[in-house]
Length: 154
Image 1 (spheres, helix red, strand yellow):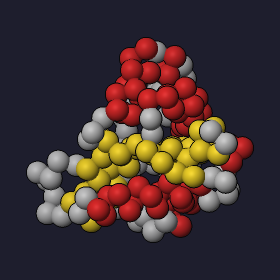
Image 2 (cartoon, rainbow, N blue to C red):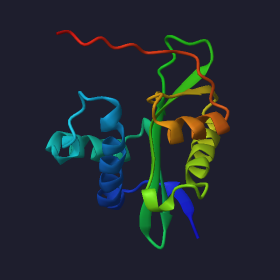
Image 3 (cartoon, rainbow, N blue to C red):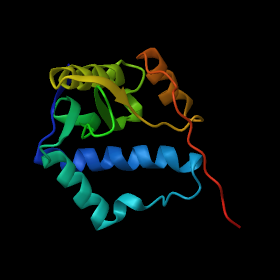
């Protein structure tokens, strides 16, 4: 049975493997990303800090004590927005477990926690060419509202 819970320090290795998987999924969409980013100690330390942070909401999906997905995000500080806004920072499900509703479960639990914190909106970024992610977000009622641009300087 697949369950969702708050991440623990002991989940680090499983989360790290998924973070690498997520990052490698995104590298083809942005040729400027370093494919070995999560081999860097600073990146690993950032994951550990995120898991332990009181400001972040970091959840894992697991089955038989194996981490198979995670979501993390945080409430924005409120200086810019009239209503509470959260940022969903990362969402990843192990490739072997995709198309089983785990992404939806993680988003639903993240949303429930944000609602308890009086958040009215959740925002996130996604590469438009990452069709599986964009499809999931659209199914979960996320709406496109902003476009980011990038210019390569030659």
